[in-house]
Length: 169
Image 1 (tube, rainbow, N blue to C red):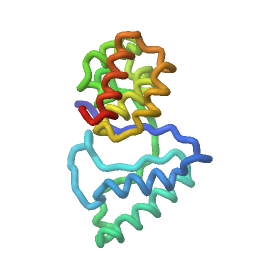
Image 2 (cartoon, helix red, strand yellow):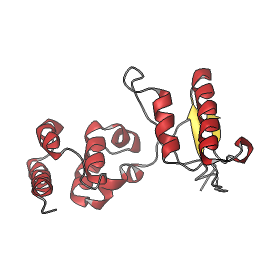
Image 3 (cartoon, rainbow, N blue to C red):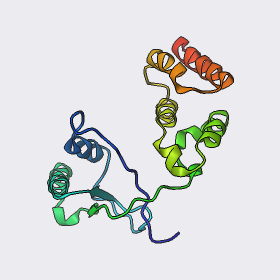
Image 4 (cartoon, rainbow, N blue to C red):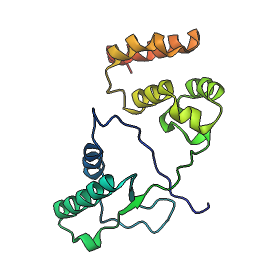
């Protein structure tokens, strides 16, 4: 498996969403006291600079306190980003794997992991299809023509969205 840790990289606009907001979201869905001995799946928060490091360390302390555990018992590491390597294309956009007709089109259009991971179209489709269909499908239908998808695939997605809105999916 190599000496790596599976992680996600999030590009964000700090004028819209702060690093602290991301940390709050992370800790709300993560148990910092759970042990994972595998480097591949280790618990970690990564930072790019000293300000992010301080924010991450402070948020870890708050998360531990909320769980009622000592900071020394926390199993989540705070680590500087050194290198980020994109996974292969077939590892990107997990929820799209449930829709092979969509995945095949996107894999042909974005032939490496980085281009697929960075694709706004793939990200939006993955988010909608992975949400359990709880997203704003009316908004999705207004965005859909901008995606530049083949007509047959666009029609398939329109039917999926329409069925979801009608409560039949």
